[in-house]
Length: 310
Image (cartoon, rainbow, N blue to C red; front, side, top):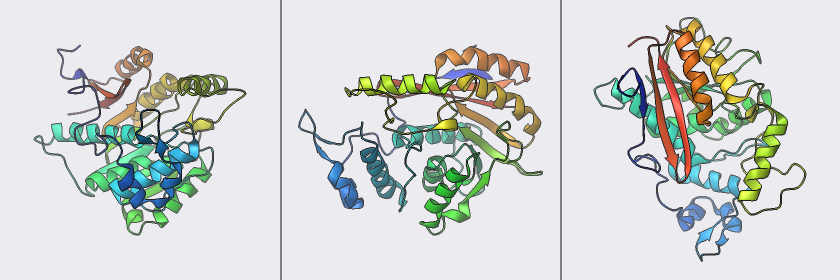
């Protein structure tokens, strides 16, 4: 498979964030506090004497995200309701930079920029993070969908706090919990990319067990059902069959929109999900698919991209 460019596994140049990712180095907390003074109350010296925050504290993580969005992307007034997913921004930015490389590969090595590039974000969440970073980084135009009206309302509040963002980011409520693209992609509409961070777990119990492990790794007591430091609830964290089942369903449904999107893509967090994903791609008749490996420190991730022509 590695010798076939139409079915490729592509590793990052070296372990770590993408070279264009603005979050490559350590956080400059003085600069971040200057950009967002509310962060100051969460910053303190850690065991090594370095300035940091308590990453087990959801409020601290939200404050850090708010500061990063102001400082690196010029996004003001970002916030999310309690318990909603608070994404780690460096990793989210990496997905977008590797997507830009994917588009560049078919454009003479030049990253296409500006609103002529249209991207669909499946499951944007209350945080709307991919459209915010993608618009600020490359000027792309986004359609962001979600099944949760409260998440859409939260994303709209972020857009309302930033004049002009509403012109490049449109929000759409997915009316059916059984659909992914159907009901969101309109007749005659075309997208250069779709992206998605699918629900990771197969059940609420599995999601809670994962939360317990994360708290243990952070050196915190985990009793009952503690809040995850990055939050998340319901469809943000789990669906029947977990991410593999969700992605297989996405691939099957993508066949109906093969002429309306150049590249379909999705994160796949578990390497164990890949064999089932590849079988679904083969069943759908996909000839060109790629697995792009990513890394952030010891954390490994990847996304799968597929196209029906090219």
